[in-house]
Image (tube, rainbow, N blue to C red; front, side, top):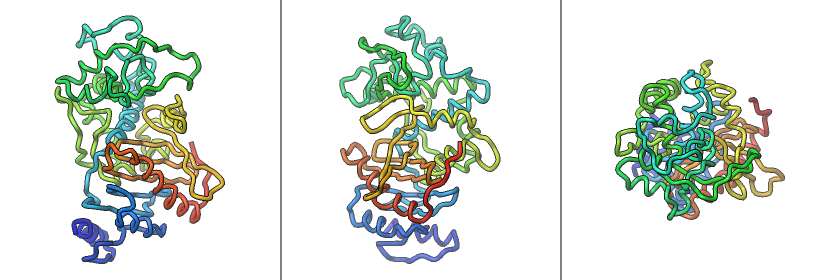
Length: 365
């Protein structure tokens, strides 16, 4: 079985023993006693789970792979990649390439003018609006008939032109109170943010992120999706290893610092922890990062997580109160239960194990 072979190879490289020639190959690492979780996944109780990594205090306490995935598999975590774009915006601000998030979005696209549906309202759209999915664009990926729906962008021959030319929502009103504005999930806006970053820093987005972020974290050979015009998709569809996603979560939990270097400004990371708008009845949204609460069965309280999240049930959940990062990669794309089953794995197995062993910590900011 491919999964068994990969696990055996990884264990041999690490110098640790593992069982061979067994369909229920043991996890590469399991000091949380989560074998029952892996057994449930292998038994088909959870659909299309590819990898799970649990980090606590910077150490990996649990790591397992399923189906045909292994430690070197790069999994497309879909919109979880948007959260990396938010980190890139913060780095560009720290590098002096961007003056801040209140800059007009269209000011970076003079070369594309004329722009359809231009005018004062469109010119008023800021980077902050795109970061919080609260712009005036008539763009909603959750509504198929939306003019700015991402599937329409993918069918176009020029994603940049498509995103810039999205019409305005006639009913849009900018809310004066922060956190009470509208939320309209728009991948096209996140894609434009990537173009803003690369134009401000003067190098391709993927080269900038590799140099400033991925190389220091040891992330190699990322698999980027590209638009027809050749630039990378910064609204998601980035494939990385499970440990790579876990490293990004740990970076955010550690305030943007890694090995003594401040890769992302601490003030920007603090800003990531601030919910900006109510996205769903039970989740909030910040700068391309999600906020959600999780509760183990029978527990008396919730634990809050800052999350990278994407289609398929992909999650990188940062739990400051537990000093933990939970990474679950899943190819359960476009299924109604995709996020529900990921939450179930966290709540039924991972949270109880972390709380039982370590309890809570005082989160640092």
